[in-house]
Image (cartoon, rainbow, N blue to C red; front, side):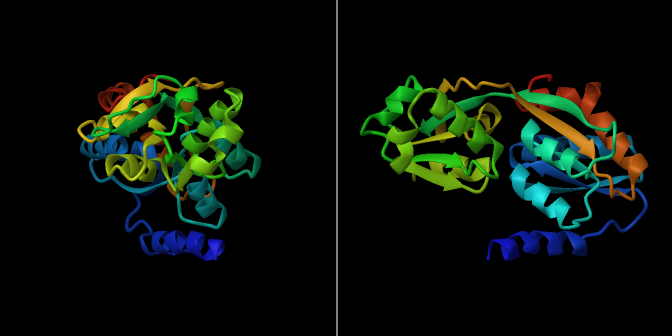
Amino acid sequence: MKSLRLLAPVAALLLSLPLHAQEIVVSAAASLTQAFQAVGQAYEQANAGQKVTFNFAASGALLSQIQQGAPVDVFASADQATMDRAATARLLTEGSRADFARNTLVVVVPATSAHKPQALKDLTEPAYARIASGTPASVPAGKYTADAVAAAGLTDALQSRWVFGESVRQVLNYVARAEVDAGFVYRTDALIEADKTRIAFTVPTSTAVTYPIAQVAASRQAGAAASFIAFVRGAQGQAILQKFGFSSP
């Protein structure tokens, strides 16, 4: 059943193959949705005749699609580990990988909540019976969360409280709708729902939350893919990312 769920988005992508020589498909982490849509619009305006089609999802799910042959030209992940797996599988164009943004992991609570934790240990209190996080195996924010919780010695204490989402944006929606008492998302996500969620505190992570981008080796639009990556890393792309709360890598 899981394989069928993964094949569905691949089929959708196959139906949206580039229609002309300068159209590229960019698969990007869900947390990049608004920022990359703005970057894509600016890129198209600066490069007449070129078009960018986006596919947003959890980084692990995007990698699975690429492994199954989805027609992707550029891959932008929310963590290094997922991009490492892509590199190990030789799915990336050699020398094209580069970091382009940095983020931070935070705990958010519904704006209507009467409680606001100050640290990870506070989440063991009865007020936080349901805590949302991305699925650690496929959502980078979920893996950062699991590692931080383990480092704090709270894995067993919080085990029965988890509500897992398929992407960081799904976790954000759980919190915004007050379906959970707290959730782990990126700071940039929290800013999107600033009227429905409150940032409680920043979560310490053992490694920095950095975003790598690379050209997919199977891309038939090598020049356009490289051009888009250069735009993301350039002054205009970086300015747009910072507008959405990301910082330089």
